[in-house]
Amino acid sequence: MRWPHRVRARVRARLRLRSRLRRAGRADDGSAIAEFVMVSALLLFVVLAVLQLAVALYVRNTLISAAAEGARFGARADASPADGAARAASLISASLNPSFAERISARTTRTQDGVDVVVVTVAAPLPVFGPIGPAEGFKVSGRAFSEVQVAAPAPAGAS
Image (cartoon, rainbow, N blue to C red; front, top):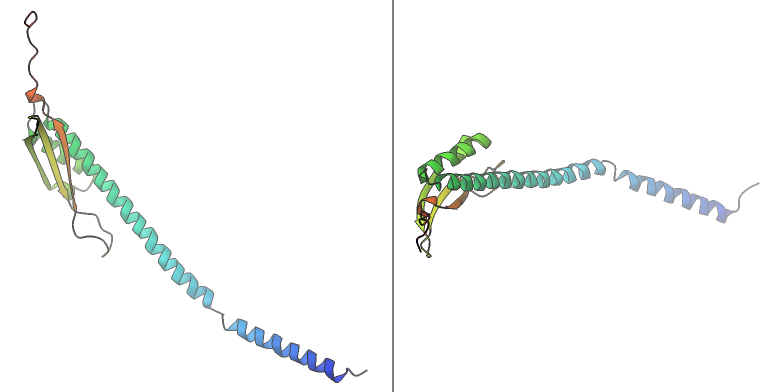
């Protein structure tokens, strides 16, 4: 039995359409690989940026902690601000690279209310991975009330 002419034409049209769709689908061959490379490069950049931020925050927090501890150490009645700077340098060298402890200064300042305060200042480079990031570094300081200015207690019976 022969198919009517219209039916054969429809079947041929559908076969041609199916053939075109297959060829069009082949035009996308390899695009998954290209998309993967582009997305992975972007994802890698984001991961490295987050890692850079995490390391910078870790270094900053470590420097602030060491400066504050150095200020507290230098503010004791039996110590000087230079002892506080040395303490901060030893703490930084123990927890980070010693290059972060190269620029440390300590001084005693007086506030507007007349209170003596020991200030330990640490200036350190910003740890940067690769060519991305600011050129400046950190400048942090720690402050502590100087115990030298604490007055001796009044003798008993004196008013």
